[in-house]
Length: 199
Image 1 (cartoon, rainbow, N blue to C red):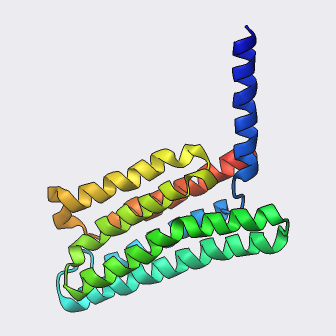
Image 2: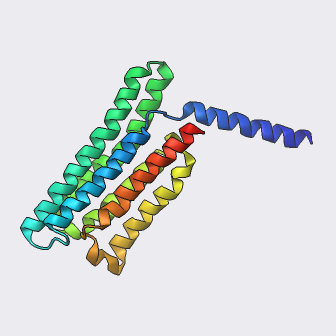
Image 3: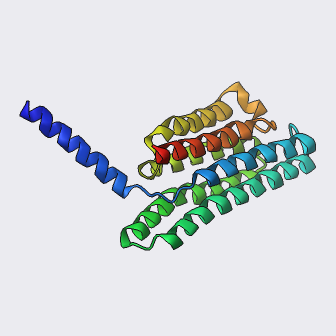
C-alpha cells in the first residue's frame, strides 16, 4: 500500500513539474487563425491552379503557400513574442527559448530542402516534405504542447508518407492537400491548446 501511494505521489509531482516547465506562450487563437489561413490559401489555389502543372501554375502554387507560411509564422511567433512581453520571469524566458529553438531546425531544414526541391523542379515532393518537417517540429516541441496534440503530430507524419511514397503523390499539389494538413491540423491544435488551458 505504501509503495502504491509513493508511486501515486511521484506521478503527481512529475505532472506538476511538467506543467511548470510547459511553455504557455503557444496561442490557441494563433494556431486556429493559421489553420483558417491555410483554408483561405486553398481556396485561392482552387481559383488559380487547382492541380498545378505549368510553370505559371507552379509559381502561383508557391506564392500562395509561401504566403500562407509567412502568415502562419507571423501569427504563431507573434503570439509567442507577445506572451513573452507580458511574462518576464526568468523561467518564462527559458521556456520561450526552449520552445522557439526546438522547432527552429525543422523550419530551417524544411526551408533549405524546399529550396533544393524547387531548384530541381521537384514540386510534387513539397507537400510531403512540409508535412514531414512540421511533424518533426511538433514532435520536438511535444514538451511544450498538450499531450492531446500527439495524434495531430502522427497525422502530419502519416500525410507526409501518403503524399511522398504512395500513389497519392501524383495528387500532392492538388488544392485540397495542404488544407487537409495545415488547415485541419492547425485548427485541431488550436482547439486542443484551448481545451487544455480551459481545464
